[in-house]
Image (cartoon, rainbow, N blue to C red; front, side, top):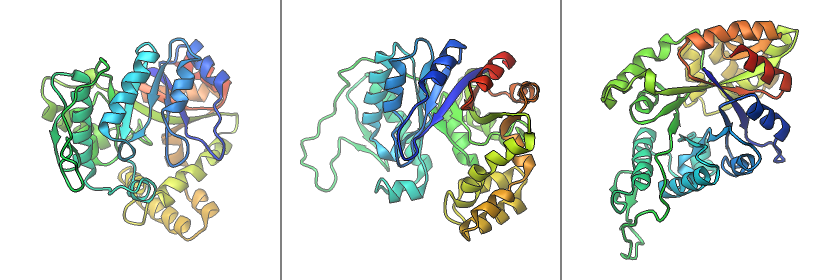
Length: 340
C-alpha cells in the first residue's frame, strides 16, 4: 500500500501548503491529489506543484467531466504529463446535479453513459490511431447538430502522448461496477476498510465485464482518508463530524444524496436520516453531533501515532493500493510514512 496526499480545493482564498507537499515528496509519497467543486480548479495547482517537486505524481481527484469536453481534458492531461516528466494521473468524476446544472449550466443527463463515452473519447485521442470521431448520447464529434456550420472535421491530436492512467470517482453500485470495467483505478469516497463486503461483488462484476483477466492485481483503489493526529481520540473525531454532516445531510437534495445513500449501505440508515433532517432544517451543529463515532472512526485515521499505525493494518488488509491522506500535520505525514 502506497501513500498519497490529498490537498482538496480552496476556501475563500487559494493557498497551498508547499512545505507539507515537499515533505510528502521527500518521504516517498507516491502522489498528491487536487480537487475542485465550484471555486478553485483541480489542474492549475498541480502545474504549480509539479514545478516545485521532484518525484511525487500529480493527480486530479477529480476533474469534473461536465466542466470540460473530453478533448480539452485529453489535451490538458497530456500537456501536464509531459511537462511533469510523466507524473500525471487523471482522476475524473461526474460531480452531482446541483453543481453540474447549477454551476456549469449543463444537463446532468445519464452519468454512467457520460462516463463511458468520456473515457472512450479521451483514450481515442491519446491512441492517435485515426482522426477522432464519436457518436453517442452525450458527445457527437464532429458536431453536426443544431447551429453547426457543417465544417467540422475529424482531427488527430498534434501532441503525441501516452495512455495516462484514468481513475474514476464512484459511489453508487452501478458506477463502481462501471469504474472497475473501464478505468485503471477507483477513487472511493468514505471508504471503510471494515466493510469491504459492500463493494467486493460489485468490483468483481466490473472486472468480469472488462474481460482480459482484469482483477484487483492490476487495478488501483486510491481511497481518501482524513488523518488527524492527537492524544484525545474523541476530540479528533469531533473535528471530523461537521464535514461528515455536510455531506450526509446537505450535499445533495433529499432523495438525491449519494453520500447519504452510502452511509445507509454501511448500515447507518437511522443516523443518516436524522443527520439529513437536522441539516436540511438548518440545525448544522445538531447534525454534526448526530454523526456516530463508529462511522467517523471507520472512514478516518485519528488519535495518537501508535493508534494510527495500528489501524493502518485494516486499510492494508482491505485491498486498497493507494491511501490518499487528507492531512495537514507534518508529524502525521511522518507517522503514516513510518507505518507504511
